[in-house]
Image (cartoon, rainbow, N blue to C red; front, side):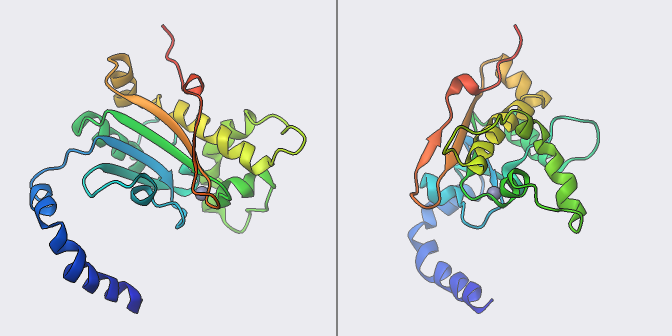
Length: 200
Ligand SMILES: [Zn+2]
């Protein structure tokens, strides 16, 4: 914990003064251009990957970068999406999966999750991801295949949220699917044709 306190000290001493103008502006302004939905994984840091400044990304991080499809009832992810899209008016939404994802590994390898019922329940939001991951081709890593299909499936779930559906219909928002590779630092963008297309 001590290194966190030391980090705060260093932030206040060195980083904040260099960005004082930006923070003065941000103190009264919240206009992020992008909603970034990523995994909670400690190795996937949205602002680092995208080299963005405070104020640019509205971030939601969930285990497995899962986005539950719209349903009635209180839902922190749904509230965050609605706030970013309907209130803040973000123009782009990125769902970012990543290599070595613990959630996708558990599903792809069929880990026993009976001792972690909350995780097991949460990962049901990846049922469609598993369903659309056909048998990987020879040499293809089944976890990597599921990671990619999961991003596509979560983009489809995202589009079920009324605020997103409304913004898509008005052409006010664009959806993007990314996969970040931890070992190389590369980001693959899924074919935009893989994004959900609303029925005409
Ligand atoms: Zn992950």
